[in-house]
Amino acid sequence: MKHQLDFEKPIAELQNKLEELKRHPGEHSLGISFEDEVALIEKKIEETRRQIFANLSAWDRIKIARHPKRPFTLDYIRMAFSDFNELHGDRLFAEDRAMVAGFATLGGHKVMVIGTQKGRDTKENIRRNFGSAHPEGYRKALRLMKLADKFGLPIITLIDTAGAYPGIGAEERHIAEAIAVNLREMMVFGVPIIAAVIGEGGSGGALGIGVADRVLILENAYYSVISPEGCAAILWKDRSAAAKAAEALKITARHLLELGLVDEIVPEPLGGAHTKPDKAAQTLREHLLKHLEDLIAMPEAERLKGRYAKFRAFGHVAEKQEPATEKAEA
Image (cartoon, rainbow, N blue to C red; front, side, top):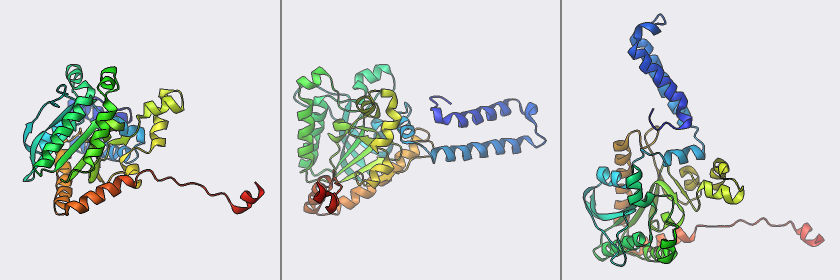
């Protein structure tokens, strides 16, 4: 298996055994026919795969979210949308290729689609800045969201970034201010907004295009205020404690749905979206369309009220009350 993850080793061993059997069928006879033996191994592979992917840890899912073959924003745009016409530049400083955006069609609806884009190899990753946008990327996104709002086009954002770029240049051009302005402006746009976390959803870099009426997340994606490695470095003083941090952060799709931070989990093919990209894109398209049509049918005032209430409800704190007797003794 190419780009095999560590927990996939039992599957890889069975697949190697199957390939060897097909190459030398006579050497592996167990007293049953060749076809039956192949069928047995294929059944075992399927059972093993189901068992492994039904019991993934938070850290395992993060590995899938970061898989180098996982579909990126432009892949989903190509497979789930049509008539994509990319637009460039923030009209203030530069073009940021870590943020892609443009007009597109989704199931007969004209939309503005915006997303963070990683690269497939070193050269493209440098050009895309590894999917970490600069301030001009967020300002480009805002410029095009304002354009969509002006012409009454729904906005769909696809989130896949480890975070906004933290370099000196980004600080000099006010990355925090660019993200903060996006949060403020996205809260009041009158058009429907849907955000989908398709891979990594890291910190303000993700939230900068993540304020929406509906927030969806793919089954093996994650959404977090900090990366597990960053959390481990702060709390445990050791980045190798990332797996422990991932569990503590509650950043997987299931945890986020339970906490009310996302509205729906979009299922992926068994093994992750990279195993069957076309199927993953079709499933995402169906979920986007369902929510888009619901939001279009909703009055604008109701949408805005619901969007505000959604984000105001985040961050509840439960405090333990001291028993009355303890207070009296104190």
